[in-house]
Image 1 (spheres, rainbow, N blue to C red):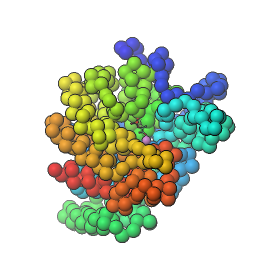
Image 2 (image 1 turned 30 degrees about the vertical axis):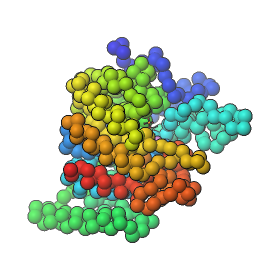
Image 3 (image 1 turned 30 degrees about the horizontal axis):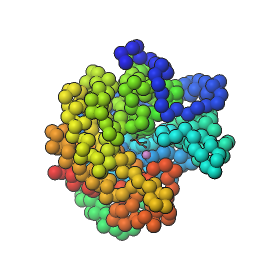
Image 4 (image 1 turned 180 degrees about the vertical axis):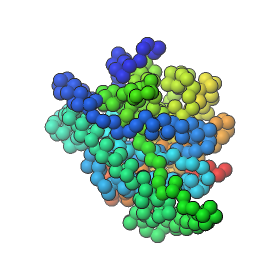
Length: 445
Ligand code: PEP
Ligand code: CO
């Protein structure tokens, strides 16, 4: 582990969850082009996010990280991007208002295109093809052409990531994101419902507060006219990540410039594996998903390896145990990391430990279990003298029926009505807002 690090040193380690490309020369050519393209984000933005995350670790800010399980290339359009941004902005407003704390908005967006799968191959009616691994690698239809891992898709994905981030940056800079005009963030399909009334109330008192403040200080507050918005994705496809790993002038360090905050998935966090090796050498703030039956010593060692300089904001551990297991696992995990003296930011992903399959084969999640895991997270952190610094959610600004429950009472038989995800079930708008209100209540405790 202590060997010299370089952007390619991961290649000497066992690597999980990579596609098998048929033609190495074709892959090399695509990677060569990729590494010649300009970066999507800058080291200044990355360092600014790390500084904010250090505040989340100290309880001065809270992370709202969310978006699709897996972005689709066809979702790279103005309407879909705007909807995702709207729901995250609305949720962040609820959180800021309730908690009186800064909220750090991080999308699972602008590059969340690669997925880990439980098997390399999928077999239907005696035919075996590559599993769908996300649009960065192949396509969903069960045909040999669509499922072939195609290196050109790395370039198409990078371009879409850049288009998405470009649009988000422009929207965040003013006009659309102006807090004086939160009506810009309304979603047209939202009916009168208990949550939307509560949200409208919040908006009107917020508007009053802003007008009051501006009247008192006799100036308008330009900082309210823009928001910070950061991007993240699972750093799964290591050739892709490597090709965007650069040094920048006057900083003696390597950055992954494809996103602000890449994270390591739960399936690729093996201490001896290639993902830990790659991530230990980049200077971005990074996340690691932590779930299943964890070996707490291994998690503690991982914290040491990924954050040897004990830098605040560097490492976010995103636990995703599931509502039924968090009670057994989280406290010991926290204690083991505390003993290392390594600062980490804790975030709760209440989605990935609560996935279930219905009798009819729909992959879903129960809203009650999601809430229960969130509530328990807050309590367990408090009891351990730790604090929950954020949440990590799969959600969408669409009116989908993928998770069961919530005040809109999505039932099992409603799932087929608007089930759009190709991978994991997401919270719809109403469910997402309900979660935001719950978190803001928990944070005021
Ligand atoms: C995900 O975030 O979509 C995911 C695959 O999560 P995990 O690594 O926690 O299973
Ligand atoms: Co997922």
